[in-house]
Every structure is written in structure tokens, then in C-alpha cells.
Amino acid sequence: MINKYFKQFLLIILFANIIIKYRKINYFKLNIEINCLKKYYILNNNGILINKKKFYKSDNPKVSIISSIYNREKYILRFMRSIQNQFFDDIEIIFVDDYSKDNSIKKIENCQNEDERIILLKNKNNKGTLISRNIGALKAKGEFLIFPDSDDILSQNILLMCYETAKKNNYEMIRFNMYSEKYFPFSLIPNNLTNLILQPELRTYLIHGFGYEGLVDGIISNKFIQKKSFLIVLNDINSFYLNQKMIYFEDGLINFSLHLKLKSLYLLKKIGYYYFFNSDGVSRSVNQDLYIKDFFLYLKYIEENTKNNKIEKDMVFYLLNLYIYDNIIFNNITDYFQIYDEVFNKLLINKFIDPININKINELKKIIENIKEKNKIK
Image (tube, rainbow, N blue to C red; front, side, top):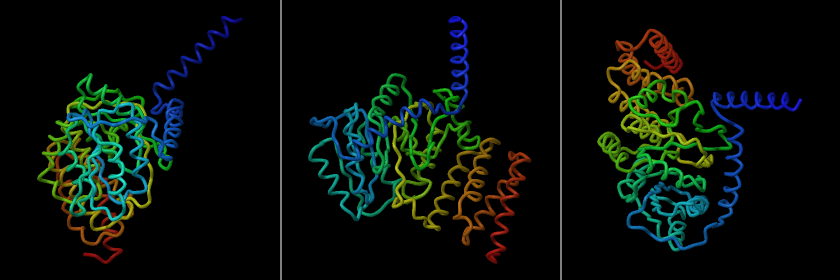
């Protein structure tokens, strides 16, 4: 009798393991990580410094944490505690103040009194997140870079896990999971993906639908990147974007270029980041002209870097499809129809576009034509 029940028990365990293996997300394991992160958040939100010790500045830090700041005085301390409570101390913390109007700088300077690893850079005018992050990257001394937002928090062990994994295996980039109560599940890596993706597969995964199998997201905050590799990418986009003030699509731009250029991506299926939705965020108040300008800069870069390949041409279509169908901003276009027509015509005459996507592109053209007709635009 015992043997019978034992066999049944083993069959149940085996069946459960098969289900977990092939499910895209293991929610049982995920919930354990989320509960731990929530407890850690409570400590940070109350400004509790778990590791009460002197923080010493290193001339050659292993990791540079770079964060662009614009009017974030309410969140600086919470963010700082999540860094100071890390299990990994050999870091520098670079804040790039993007011409804040509140007491953000004062808050950071107060933190500098207790932590000499903090470096404060100040923009003389508002340059936007993309340029501010890149300014920090060019000043960084760390072997690896990470770009968290100053209104979010890092989990306590994520820097240690990322550094040890990247250093041991010479990985150029690590992506880890994020958690957000408002957008749950949020930027999670599916279990069915292998942990290590190498080129040229990484490029193919990126282009084939932008986010194929959940591999690629448009976020930079959950990436741990080798500095020398990041600077190669930065040099690649320098003439195109470094002097442009991008408010929208800046993360997507950097991610696209990283996945095109880097040799390796390791998927660390652990939650390393707590994302907070703040209604006062820079990208929350949409400026229509800037939004569309940035979108077409993004499209232009993709077109110039994905030529003469059928799968890669699908990328441009994907973006057009996503931001016309799903984003309300494009219901009010007036000044950009000519650009759209040029993009559509270029796609339609391209020999690499398959019949299915030609039909979809024509559907999008009809949507544009309907908007024109509705607004009496020629």
C-alpha cells in the first residue's frame, strides 16, 4: 500500500516538474521571490540602513551604478538604501542631475556625507535621460555598468549575482527579472528560454518580432553590461543620437543596438528590480511632437541597421503596427503623414517583405488614410 502511494507521489512530482519546465513562467517560485522583495522594499522605504558601516571609495570599482536624476527628491533615499544595503560594496554610484528644480541635489549631497562612493554630475541644462545616462557611462570607472532609475530599487543580492556570473564566464550583458505591482507580471524571462544566447541567434531573436519569446524588452534598467562593450555601442549611436534630446524610446534605442552588437546575453531568471509606477515621471506626460520625433529617429536607426534581410525588415513593420494600433497618440497626427507615407512605400516595394506582412502594411495604410479623412488632411 505504501509502495503504491509512493509511486503515485513520484508520478505527481514528475508531472509537476514537466509542467513547470514547459510553462513560460514558474509563478510558484516567482511568488517566493516577490515576497522577499516586498519585505526588502519595506526596509528601504523606511530609510533603514541594514549594513551600518563606512563605505570607502575605490579607485577601480568593479561596478558603476549610473542614474539620471530629474526632480526625484521624494525617492532618492529609498533608492540609495537599496544600493547601500547590497551584498556587493565595490561600486561607484554616479548621479547625473538633469537640471532638477527641486531638492534632488541637496538630497544627494547629504548622502555623499555618509558614502564617499557617490559621484554627482550636473547638467547645465535639461538634456534628457538618454544623454544623461551616456554622460555617466563616459565618466564611469567600473568594469560593468547598470542603469537603474532613481525612483525604483534594486534587490539586495542582484549586483553580487550579476558580477560573479558575468566575470566568471566573460558575459557581455546579463538581463534579470523585474517586478511591478501595477504591471504584474512585468519584464519576466520565460522559463523555456535557454540561459545563454549568443550571436547570431541573439540578433535573429531581436529582429523576429522584437520581443520574440519574451527574450527582448525595451528596458535598460534590468541590464548589467560590460563597460567596454557598452562604449562600443555608444560610439555606434553617437553621431545619430548622442546630441539629440530623447524623452521617449531611449531605452528601446539602446536595447536594440546592444542586442545587435554584443556577442553574448545571459538570462538570469531572478528578480533583481522593483519597478514603481510614478504618475509624475518624465515620460508620463506625453508631448505629441517630441513623441513622434523620437519614434521616427528610432525607426530610422532600425532601418539603417537592418538592411537586405527579410526577417529584419519585419522589425520596422512591428514597430509601425505596435505604435499605430496600440498608442492613442497616433490618433492625433497631423504633421507626420508624409513621413509615414515614405516609410510605407519603402516597405511595400521591398522585395524582402512577405505577402502576409504586405497585407498588414496595407491595413495600416488604410488606418492612416482614415485618420487623414477624419481630420480632412491631404
